Length: 312
Image 1: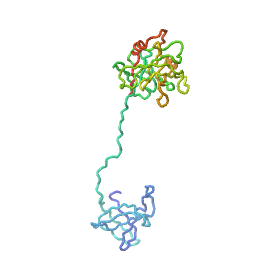
Image 2 (image 1 turned 90 degrees about the vertical axis):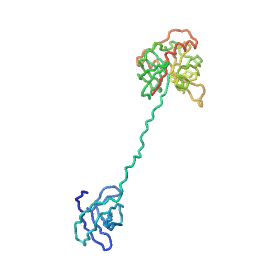
Image 3 (image 1 turned 120 degrees about the horizontal axis):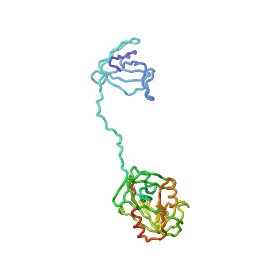
Image 4 (image 1 turned 120 degrees about the vertical axis):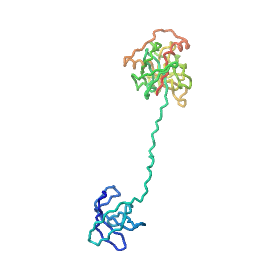
């Protein structure tokens, strides 16, 4: 209310009781919080001390109070039934001490820094690298590391169905890997898996495991995958699967957990990878040399084209 507003009293003085007054014939509804126009009564009564007035609100039947009150100075002027008289409003006295501002209970959101994850990739030409889609799908930044040298990379193309990704870097490398030409793999054929398993736990150098092709299909007869016995670990994903000539015959994909089956790893077939590259017109190379090599010679020849992929 404005300070100059006066209270209009139209009521009946009851001997020995409070003076009930109407105030604009309205009250605030406790159910809706809105002011409604209805029979509304206020009253003035003696305060506990200082000869001030107790001020409260009642509904028209005086049965319900909204429990709001304050004290105002001086005494009311009693009026007879049917008469009206203006009573000057006196300054309000705040009887409730001010409270200090409360600290907000709202929690400050914590910024949780994502821990980097790692995988493996390999060059298929001088600047482009094949890896798994799941290795790079949630990266804000992709870093490539090889022999202590790092460089940044960006995702060029992905195949979410077959879990493949092609990334590109400014770090040129002439030691790219070549794909196998001619006949496909056979069950029992020797294979080599290379990569960076378990991140820094096993060291920063590329690792090698050997095994054989145990099935030409993956889980539930998935014809885009092969099963191998070479052990792989988290961090090996995206690494090359090589034959006895050192040619790429697949991309390391996953392994089955031990409570499902032991010593079963999965790789994406090289033909699927080549189709992915052909669709996007990416250059890659086929190996035309037919002779087999020793594992140590294969490792020595291809390790310079395999690098660690760090997802941040």
